[in-house]
Image 1: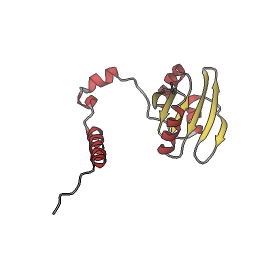
Image 2 (image 1 turned 60 degrees about the vertical axis):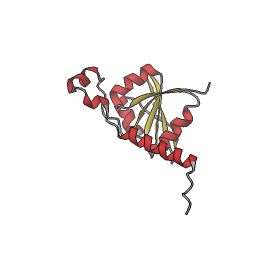
Image 3 (image 1 turned 120 degrees about the vertical axis):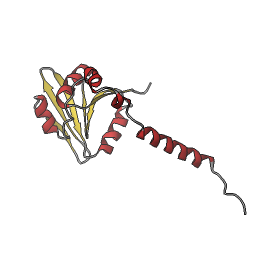
Image 4 (image 1 turned 90 degrees about the vertical axis):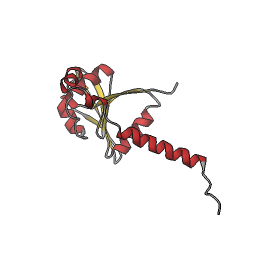
Length: 143
Protein backbone atom coordinates (compact mmCIF):
# COMPACT_ATOMS: atom_id res chain seq x y z
CA UNK A 1 0.00 0.00 0.00
CA UNK A 2 1.42 3.41 -0.99
CA UNK A 3 0.95 6.65 0.88
CA UNK A 4 -1.29 9.26 -0.79
CA UNK A 5 0.63 11.91 -2.72
CA UNK A 6 0.49 15.43 -1.25
CA UNK A 7 -0.13 18.14 -3.84
CA UNK A 8 1.88 21.30 -2.85
CA UNK A 9 -0.54 23.78 -4.46
CA UNK A 10 -3.55 22.26 -2.67
CA UNK A 11 -1.68 22.25 0.61
CA UNK A 12 -0.77 25.93 0.19
CA UNK A 13 -4.37 26.83 -0.71
CA UNK A 14 -5.65 24.99 2.37
CA UNK A 15 -3.14 26.76 4.63
CA UNK A 16 -4.07 30.18 3.20
CA UNK A 17 -7.74 29.44 3.73
CA UNK A 18 -7.16 28.37 7.32
CA UNK A 19 -4.99 31.42 7.95
CA UNK A 20 -7.63 33.81 6.64
CA UNK A 21 -10.29 32.08 8.73
CA UNK A 22 -8.11 32.40 11.82
CA UNK A 23 -7.53 36.09 11.16
CA UNK A 24 -11.24 36.65 10.57
CA UNK A 25 -12.08 35.03 13.89
CA UNK A 26 -9.47 36.83 15.95
CA UNK A 27 -10.61 39.18 18.64
CA UNK A 28 -10.98 42.89 17.98
CA UNK A 29 -8.26 44.68 19.98
CA UNK A 30 -10.56 47.68 20.42
CA UNK A 31 -13.05 45.43 22.21
CA UNK A 32 -10.50 44.88 24.97
CA UNK A 33 -10.07 48.62 25.64
CA UNK A 34 -11.99 50.37 28.31
CA UNK A 35 -15.32 51.69 26.94
CA UNK A 36 -14.39 55.25 27.96
CA UNK A 37 -11.13 55.04 25.96
CA UNK A 38 -13.02 54.02 22.81
CA UNK A 39 -15.50 56.87 23.15
CA UNK A 40 -12.77 59.45 23.61
CA UNK A 41 -10.98 58.56 20.36
CA UNK A 42 -13.94 57.61 18.13
CA UNK A 43 -15.60 60.12 15.82
CA UNK A 44 -19.36 59.91 16.20
CA UNK A 45 -20.80 58.50 12.98
CA UNK A 46 -24.41 57.55 12.44
CA UNK A 47 -25.43 54.09 11.27
CA UNK A 48 -24.95 53.84 7.52
CA UNK A 49 -27.84 55.01 5.39
CA UNK A 50 -29.94 52.43 3.55
CA UNK A 51 -29.14 51.76 -0.12
CA UNK A 52 -31.57 54.25 -1.61
CA UNK A 53 -30.59 57.27 -3.67
CA UNK A 54 -33.77 59.00 -2.59
CA UNK A 55 -33.08 58.40 1.12
CA UNK A 56 -29.42 59.48 0.87
CA UNK A 57 -30.43 62.58 -1.12
CA UNK A 58 -33.03 63.56 1.46
CA UNK A 59 -30.56 63.06 4.32
CA UNK A 60 -28.01 65.33 2.62
CA UNK A 61 -30.38 67.99 1.33
CA UNK A 62 -29.75 67.46 -2.36
CA UNK A 63 -32.12 67.13 -5.26
CA UNK A 64 -30.59 64.08 -6.93
CA UNK A 65 -30.53 64.08 -10.73
CA UNK A 66 -30.72 60.46 -11.92
CA UNK A 67 -28.04 59.49 -14.46
CA UNK A 68 -28.36 55.70 -14.51
CA UNK A 69 -31.27 53.53 -13.45
CA UNK A 70 -30.27 49.97 -14.34
CA UNK A 71 -30.72 46.55 -12.79
CA UNK A 72 -27.09 46.35 -11.57
CA UNK A 73 -26.78 49.93 -10.27
CA UNK A 74 -28.49 53.28 -9.87
CA UNK A 75 -26.50 56.51 -10.04
CA UNK A 76 -27.42 60.13 -9.43
CA UNK A 77 -25.65 63.48 -9.19
CA UNK A 78 -26.18 65.71 -6.18
CA UNK A 79 -25.53 69.42 -6.61
CA UNK A 80 -25.50 71.61 -3.49
CA UNK A 81 -23.85 74.88 -2.46
CA UNK A 82 -21.33 72.82 -0.43
CA UNK A 83 -20.24 70.81 -3.49
CA UNK A 84 -21.23 68.13 -5.95
CA UNK A 85 -21.09 64.38 -5.55
CA UNK A 86 -22.23 61.18 -7.23
CA UNK A 87 -24.16 58.58 -5.27
CA UNK A 88 -24.32 55.02 -6.63
CA UNK A 89 -26.46 52.25 -5.17
CA UNK A 90 -26.33 48.51 -5.83
CA UNK A 91 -28.77 45.63 -5.32
CA UNK A 92 -26.02 43.49 -3.70
CA UNK A 93 -22.76 43.96 -1.80
CA UNK A 94 -21.03 41.79 -4.41
CA UNK A 95 -21.91 44.24 -7.21
CA UNK A 96 -20.72 47.15 -5.05
CA UNK A 97 -17.35 45.46 -4.43
CA UNK A 98 -16.96 44.67 -8.14
CA UNK A 99 -17.69 48.31 -8.98
CA UNK A 100 -15.18 49.55 -6.37
CA UNK A 101 -12.54 47.09 -7.59
CA UNK A 102 -12.99 48.45 -11.11
CA UNK A 103 -12.94 52.05 -9.88
CA UNK A 104 -9.65 51.36 -8.08
CA UNK A 105 -7.91 51.36 -11.49
CA UNK A 106 -8.63 55.10 -11.67
CA UNK A 107 -8.10 55.94 -8.02
CA UNK A 108 -10.23 58.31 -6.01
CA UNK A 109 -11.84 58.58 -2.63
CA UNK A 110 -15.30 57.22 -1.86
CA UNK A 111 -17.66 57.13 1.08
CA UNK A 112 -18.88 53.53 1.20
CA UNK A 113 -21.87 52.07 3.01
CA UNK A 114 -24.03 48.98 2.71
CA UNK A 115 -24.82 48.65 -1.01
CA UNK A 116 -23.88 52.27 -1.81
CA UNK A 117 -20.89 54.48 -2.58
CA UNK A 118 -20.51 58.25 -2.87
CA UNK A 119 -17.75 59.83 -4.93
CA UNK A 120 -16.61 63.38 -4.13
CA UNK A 121 -13.71 65.44 -2.87
CA UNK A 122 -12.33 64.04 0.42
CA UNK A 123 -13.33 67.14 2.46
CA UNK A 124 -16.93 66.77 1.29
CA UNK A 125 -16.95 63.02 1.96
CA UNK A 126 -15.85 63.62 5.56
CA UNK A 127 -18.76 66.03 6.00
CA UNK A 128 -21.26 63.66 4.34
CA UNK A 129 -20.04 60.85 6.59
CA UNK A 130 -21.38 62.68 9.65
CA UNK A 131 -24.83 62.59 8.04
CA UNK A 132 -25.07 59.27 6.17
CA UNK A 133 -22.43 57.17 7.95
CA UNK A 134 -20.22 54.75 6.04
CA UNK A 135 -16.44 54.52 5.74
CA UNK A 136 -14.09 56.61 3.62
CA UNK A 137 -12.07 54.41 1.23
CA UNK A 138 -9.14 55.77 -0.75
CA UNK A 139 -8.62 53.74 -3.91
CA UNK A 140 -5.17 53.74 -5.51
CA UNK A 141 -4.99 54.15 -9.27
CA UNK A 142 -2.69 52.26 -11.57
CA UNK A 143 0.83 53.68 -11.55
